[in-house]
Amino acid sequence: MSVSITAAAALLEAGALVAFPTETVYGLGADAENPQAVARIYQAKGRPSDHPVIVHVAPGADLAHWCDDLPPQATQLVTAFWPGPLTLIVKRAAHIPDAVSGGQDTVGLRCPSHPVAIELLAAFKGGKGGVAAPSANKFGNVSPTTAQHVRDEFQAELDSGLLGAVLDGGQSAVGIESTIVDLSRLATHGPVLLRPGHISGEQIAAVIGQLPALPDAAAPRASGTLDSHYAPHTPVAMQHADLLGETLNQLLNAGRRVALIHYSEMPPASASVRLAADPASYAHALYASLRTMDQVGAELILVEAPPTGADWLGVNDRLRRAAFGSTGILQQFLGL
Ligand code: TXA
Ligand code: MG
Image 1: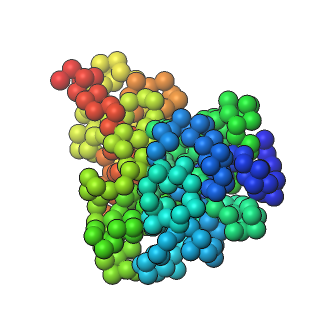
Image 2: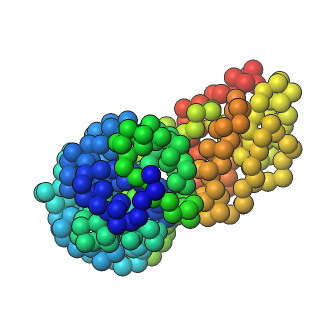
């Protein structure tokens, strides 16, 4: 169903689910202060209920409503990067439902920059509410970067009314999920980068004067940090540019149907998509490309491994997780 932003805000206020565009990926939203509404997110996604969801707030929102003890670093990062693709993990205020925090003592906060998301958040509860929203995909799948991706993923839930509406805001500009930085354990761990994204650790360091550490085993649970996540249904394997042409020929000669995602000049595959060799354009197109290549009837999606520089951290993180569940597939197909 296509509805106005005012109608979508009213649906959220009534406890319904609304999918909406953000600059990173589409979100599956519910009123963060209504535990029954948040429970519907888990039901629709098929997601374990101990995984916390990010609370999306309007520009200028009173963060004291959502968290306890806001550290100065949070205020600095909000000033520098909001609205934008950065999620802050901070100590949560007591009234935040367990369904939002996954039972942890923290909450993830983000103010997205997509104009439709901003309008929705400004209309919802007069800009004073929070919309809990994970990416609008079934648990473990590739995140959606268009409204059509969301409708493809949740057609049954749209038909049953579990999902009230999908707002269409075109293709998400960033294309991979927000950077997540944990500021909830500063005294003991310093800032921790839980998920790399468009805003880099170096950019964060330039604002707060400290480079966020990479997560350790004691880091809070984040489903986006599971080894296998963001994965298409077709197996995914990564291969470096210098070996890729040879591998591709061997697979095709063995009669395998191979879909190729590459950025260098490569021989033809059963289907292929060539992405730009810069990290922002690559990220923008990555999930849509994985979805397209998932639908061409290939047995394998072969991905040219991107460069390993700091700018490529977000892209490499998502590809590694997409390929994790099919570790060993290339060797198997090549009979090694
Ligand atoms: O770009 C994004 O962040 C998108 C859009 C819709 O805003 N949202 C998104 O949500 O990617 P989701 O739920 O798919 O991923 C959010 C990640 C999960 O890995 C979740 O576990 C983690 O954030 N997270 C949320 N609250 C947390 C908390 N309090 N502590 C640790 N991790 C948290
Ligand atoms: Mg997700």
